[in-house]
Image 1 (cartoon, rainbow, N blue to C red):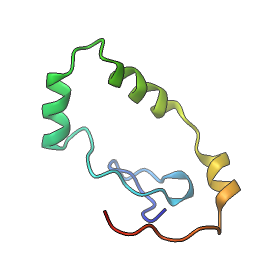
Image 2: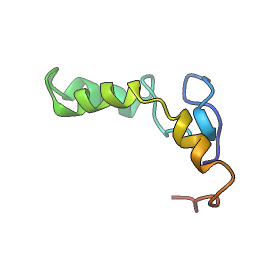
Image 3: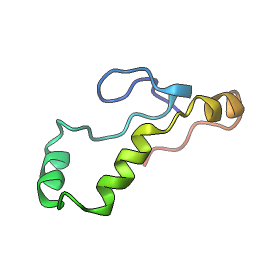
Length: 70
C-alpha cells in the first residue's frame, strides 16, 4: 500500500497502490477496443469495481511493509 488515490483522484481505502492505467490511458483504450463486450475480463472488472476494501484495509492497517518497485 503506497498511494492513497486512484486514477480518478478518488481516495482509495487503506491507501492502496494506484493502478498504472485508467480508462483514459492509451493502453486501456486499446485493450478495451479489442475485447468483445461479453469477455470474462469485463465481468471481472465489474465485480472488482463493486468490492469494498475498507474492511480489508482496517484489518491490515499498520502491518506489513512497502512493496518493492515492480
